[in-house]
Length: 294
Image (cartoon, rainbow, N blue to C red; front, side, top):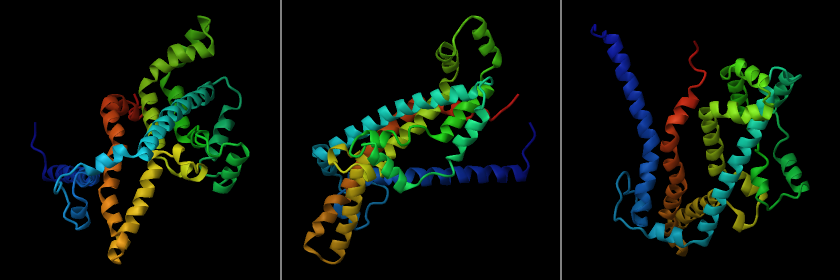
């Protein structure tokens, strides 16, 4: 094997340096949040926490686990993420499969119309009016239904059905007397596990991190997801910082929320951190589908 040229070595070193920088910028916020969540609040406010915990304490986590609002928000987030992802996946498959069938008339026109909605929509106010007129305000459906089908995921799945599932399979199934529905569940979906895992992760993460729809359509605290409570705590934390700067009597608010917000961030991110390594193999395979031809 020939020695690599100087240019190759420089290029490889630059690639490694960029990868290290990306890893540092990606991991540091998580490491800092973890360290701050188990540090004394005063040490956080004084800027003494950078990488390692200072004066380790678990008071923030004790407060979180005792809070009825946090428990309710966590349960609601699980409901929204699980139920929403299941419905998202069901409706995306139901739309992508017929649009991938070559004998379906008008499928290209329908696809163009669906793609059109990626760039133009009714906007926030008409959407709110629709949700209100449908009687969905202050219901969990107001969070789940508006984004039932993501156009990007629909197009990804449709193109996979077209390009990665051979026409011969459809023809053989039709000759054997299989109905389109039976073909979908017995042949197409088992061959599409990798891409389905990718789309499932996309939907699940979107639901888990969502807060804006709940903030707009739900005023009852017992139906808020965890992210809405986290937003409130972040706002109260900023108010506490201002109070401490001005020397106000309620400066203790800053101490109360200094480590609490980081504890909630860690608890909110924990399921995603646990789930991703379990599906990493499928995710890597699915995300690369179609990247190499031949």
